[in-house]
Image 1: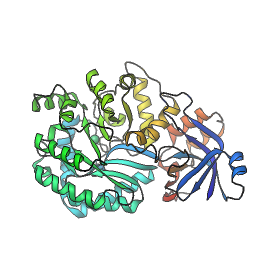
Image 2: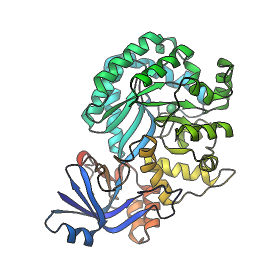
Image 3: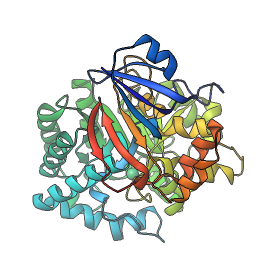
Image 4: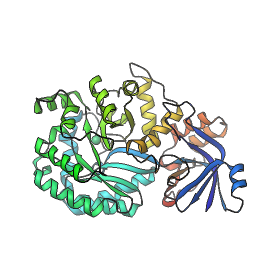
Length: 433
Ligand SMILES: [Zn+2]
């Protein structure tokens, strides 16, 4: 047993439903035993309740729950920054050529190691990761993920039309390769498997049936894909599935919409789709940096809230601008601040979106996302580097909302001192402080 003494922030509830969802403990104690949280309260109360447990003094920094990224692509780690294009053009010119290179296993292995390292460096402890189109690349990725100690949900990406022919599988080959990967990796270490058609645009009806069968045969798996990102994409999907009333209807037809379904973007959603997403208990991965960078549009957050559709954050590397989940929360704030139906996110809502909302989207809310008793000790120890802008800003702040707002605005990877999953140290910043 160990007590961590620090300034602690977490959101044990939904910060959109409950104004008091933020727990801020200026002098807090987090008690950890066997990788699980035993208690999280004011340090004085913790000291009384656990008088003999050793204390680690982290009062020069802040403890936050590990960040949860619900949409990110491992093959795209080296193409961040391809600005000036919209979705389909960006796929053709930048993304798909790079994803084709993952047919070479040594390259896939190199990218996999690089990718999981960057997740840890940025404090992301749980992630739903879009994989590669090649089974061997996925073996390399799951192996790197297992070594990283991070909580990773991922899977082979399935496509059999459009895109580049070298990224296609036949539906039968996709089914066999997926079954083998599920048997090898689902439930191993901290890994889980997700069924992932790239999007309706690149999946035939036979391929969507494969996805349906995989989920029927393995009900514990997650499902993820893209939806309603860009107007031209939506238009092309309508042409390919003339029987479908809208984009969501394609996924509905194949039973791909449920509690473990996470659909990325949903910028162009109709009211009918929002109503049905809520009825199916699907979650949306909101990726504000990517939406801005690719000119996809402003996420209709207020409409999602009004419809009761759950959403969390995704960085969408490499359409997005980087791995930082606090930066992504800030980007959500910035976009909603200038949205036609302005919504001003509170620091609590931003923290919730970067942590607990992700756990809820992934049906992991009993396992991670905040510091409630019994959950895994997944946490980030933030410490502003000496002489940094953030360190200066924090000096005179005492109000918890202001401190949290400063951290969300300014704490980049240089401020992430340690990252732990189930209490295990998965990353330690070696920079002097
Ligand atoms: Zn994406």
